[in-house]
Amino acid sequence: MKKSTCPVCDAVVTLPEGIEESEIISCGDCHTRLVVASLKREGITLKEAPKVEEDWGE
Image (cartoon, rainbow, N blue to C red; front, side, top):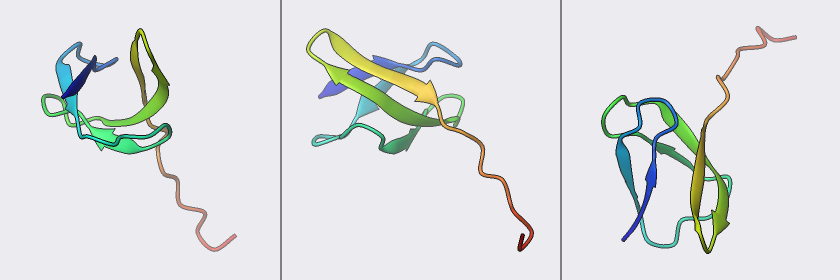
C-alpha cells in the first residue's frame, strides 16, 4: 500500500491501489479533503483540495 502525509495534520494517509493524480481523498484523522498533487518515485504529494463554492445560479 502507498502512503503519504496529510499536509494539514501530518497524519499518515494510506492511499488506495491505483490512485491517480488529481484524485480527491480524505484524511482519516482530520477529515480534510485532499487532492493527489503528484505521483513520483520519491513519494506522493498531497495538497488540501480547493473549497467548493456555490455560484448561486450565476
